[in-house]
Image (cartoon, rainbow, N blue to C red; front, side, top):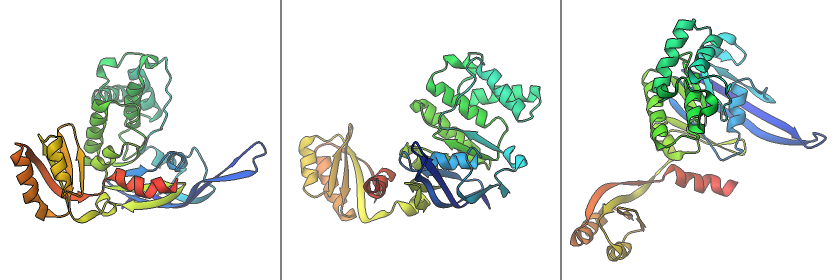
Length: 309
């Protein structure tokens, strides 16, 4: 079942002093997001991601096309009660504490005050802000505000969650906690539609992705389908090797990339593994892992998006 349906969505802006110049921010976007999946919405700055979010949240009216959420048109108020949203640059009432802010958000969602207070306490604990629950938001760092934003997006226990750059401003621990939170929401059957520039997080979390550039859809589907395996090539990770051993590896490996612990070598096929083992064991090194060589999401971006900018 599709919970987000986007059909030929187009957004034009008139810019300049006389508003005579037309700029197309979104060009006939078609997209489906299925129930219970984590869907990554990717693209460089200016690709049209935030414009899409604003249209779905009814902050903008599209020039053409239409969209539905949970089978309902975007202006359906009952549908609105079933979704949550974190904008790219959230702004909160800085004179409120985190707890007061979430209780206020709960009231906007028609939650009884006692239920809103309990929900606020639970969410502050989930996003790692329980120790700062009664601190004013003006004293929060950017990362702490982002955590508070995640909590407010969840206050009504939404079925569908829209997150525009949810990892922005988070430190590595905060990003890991956010990933775990999203994984738990998926396990509960929630649908998450989010954008991010942190491609490793996307690869770790997403069932499917859509890649946008200059307002147009470049690619859409499962990462396993988009990121093709490089025929018979093998990627081996080794440790405990010095520069002399790296030079030996370069004699037969297609590519050798030094790492802090050793190196990452790309081999033409598994026939080269025996030679690799002989070289590294002679130097008392260690084979850490062997996997089929697959294009990374970053590689895909550099190849498909980098040349189109």
